[in-house]
Length: 120
Image 1 (cartoon, rainbow, N blue to C red):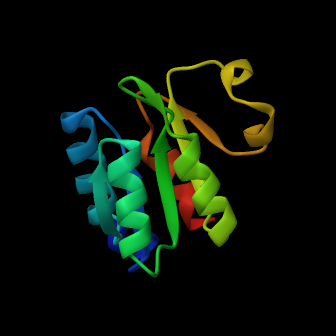
Image 2 (image 1 turned 120 degrees about the vertical axis):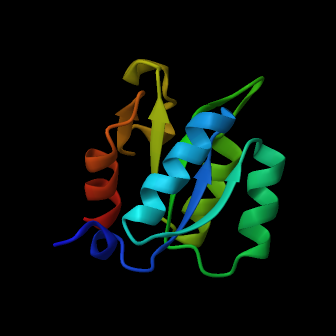
């Protein structure tokens, strides 16, 4: 399967506060066939994108966004039934119990593992 077919038109929200990491992630996901929503660098920006975008297939959420945590975005996505993956440098024990079952990928993110998490 070629890269572009892996995510074949899925609309993915990217929430990442580091501009260079966000742009690299968006480029990689686009190369794998995704339509990227964002990237958003804050909870406020991400919530606005979620509210304005009726069809989001999945999301990639950096847990730590400067001085805030991404959990309000995760809660809205969960309520809408949209699957998401956390990216973080944090250890698993720092993730709240409510999100213990969410796939967590360590930074720097392995794009293959990320694509497989979303495609699978």
